[in-house]
Length: 211
Image (tube, rainbow, N blue to C red; front, side):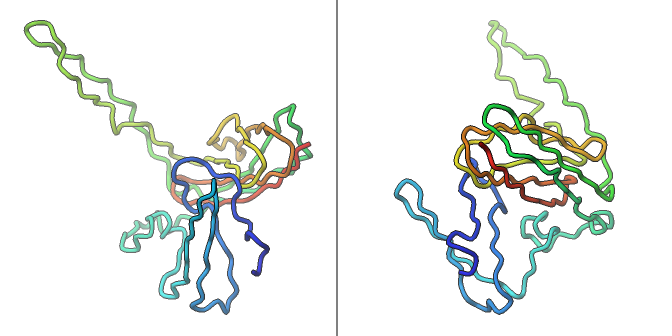
């Protein structure tokens, strides 16, 4: 308390490590009190205890630096503002047809797009005198294509069953990012859309009732 029994925590968890998904708003007079998040799954209970640190403020640049406030940002990065995102309203969905999700995104154009180098071709394999092939190093490792520009990512935050997105993440074209979602079962779902300019992010939620 206050805020209900689960404070709006996620009920559907994606695999692997997902950062900054669950956030809790506390009153101004919270002081040095502790907040304990308790999660019980498959008979096992885990707890996380949190406190406010008045000497630190978590802003977008701190998050971009993964909490390292000693990083010095350039002028362009410091001037960058996170994108703005709004979602088109949706009607009641059903399990028999995909639901179209449309996000409108605007941005200040920073950071400026940079050309992405094409992947390098691996050198031909070499062989020994007796015809055996030597182990070949993969020269394309660490040369994966890096996205630069606006995109929108969707995730399921709360819901009774799995949600499958047709395209995710989605490149913003003409100020819009459009995809479809399929719901495995009826119920009430909370979806989260996150817009990023490859540096800063903005998120918003959408509640969908599936019949």
